[in-house]
Length: 118
Length: 115
Image (cartoon, rainbow over all chains, first blue to last red; front, side):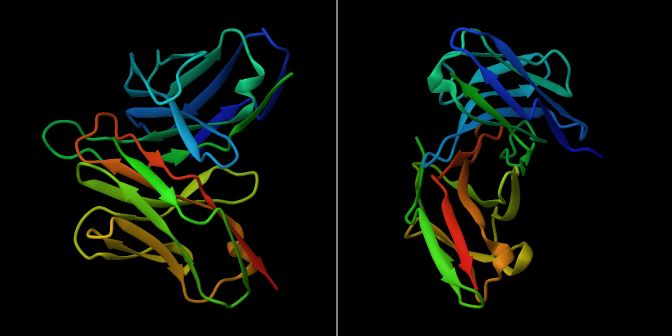
């Protein structure tokens, strides 16, 4: 089991360039998440996906888009990169139950992608 | 809305000393509580979690945390730290009945264990 994998590990972009960060999980989890980590701010949720084909905004979605076409993959896109998007990006996944029972589950994290926008 | 405050951004301690990392939260609904650890240049991994039941929760690597509902706190403790405990620690909450199982993280506490 690889768990949660992310590619690339490092990336340098120029302002205005676009790119896609890739995330894959092999645990058959239904929910996936993208966070960014900045010094002194903890992790902030960018987007999440509660199931294949659905996505929702998190706390800081501006400037990003996502895609969850397959259950095991969650893609994060930057359409026009800005220096403010320099950060470390983490993908996570979990199994979250639905229905009347409270939804809670451990999230499993990938190793991160360190992105620098010049 | 929920928020999580980790009261110390950096905690330096000597090896074999006890340590407490403080976490307070604010929420209008009941929450589940988590502590995650991030070793240098790695992703986060779960240390422990409180879902229900006993308010004292034991986790991996000798860590434990106590949920105090009246004080809305979930402080992390270890009686004797090792050099290998040097890492960043994150407290997080997940509101009951939140769609997608989202977590809200605190700002993190850097634990530095010195010989």
